[in-house]
Length: 188
Image (cartoon, rainbow, N blue to C red; front, side, top):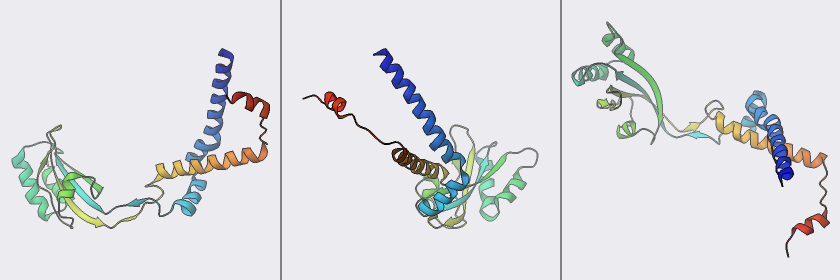
């Protein structure tokens, strides 16, 4: 039993190493093959839903009164202008540009999805920071690029390479079934 277990372990390790080399490493490192596979087989398969590109202005210091001043100024100015006005002595305002798909962010989902729409003041209970979100643009549903769907594309390309490798092995190494041994394994 121990000998059988050790052989199974050794063969499993060899199979893992071979599939790592022939399939998964190749799938993640072969950028040309991945690009060609994506263009031929996967293009148009991964999609973005409707998205909003937003600016998130975070007030890391100061209270609600300061956040109200930032909100009023942000209504008629860009995020960069807000940052310049309120970051005088030290950096209290942080600006990030993000993109959210519809249904992925509860604050953005409650807003009217139109350019220039601005959220109420939000408070992050963990960090005690205040933040405001302003919608800069609405993007229609679109296909994802290879870079945007890389993880899915590598997995699909890996599956393709594995099937190709198995087919090549079956072609080059004929399968022989010892029917006498096989029949002895079947319990009657």
